[in-house]
Picture 1 (cartoon, rainbow, N blue to C red):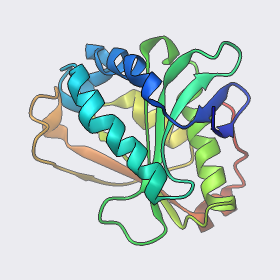
Picture 2 (cartoon, rainbow, N blue to C red; picture 1 turned 135 degrees about the horizontal axis):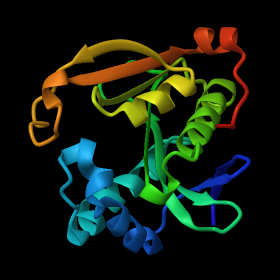
Picture 3 (cartoon, one colour; picture 1 turned 180 degrees about the vertical axis):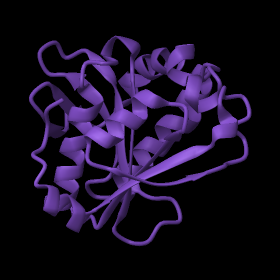
Length: 192
């Protein structure tokens, strides 16, 4: 197992083909998918033929960036994933943070712990200049994670294709944090 990052309770590692069942289960939960596509499960064939190849391609193209399976350190149980990847159409040094966790992991501080650790690693080891994250404006749980991770609300905007999500009319919110803002906050990694 190729561990990328460890926190007090999490081990972030590279995905393997053996993670297919866990991804199908994660994306099969309507509540997990609620703010992504309105609650529709991702078919196994899509996980196998589209999602996993994209994940593996990041490992080939980007050193230190991509998608990371999140396992609970004490049990080895798959909790979900984080991504820390170059932002689409963003400038060099801008990295997008994201996460998707199984419902039993919600409300336990795992998303904040993993996000803080990734932000810390990005600014201290990977040369990141700015971290951005997005969620639906109505996704209050994810917004709290971004705020607890030190990110600051920068804008609200609308994106086509989200009409199936309840509350889509309120738009998408973007949070961000620059290296200078992070350094000024002196936020330690990990923790809930």
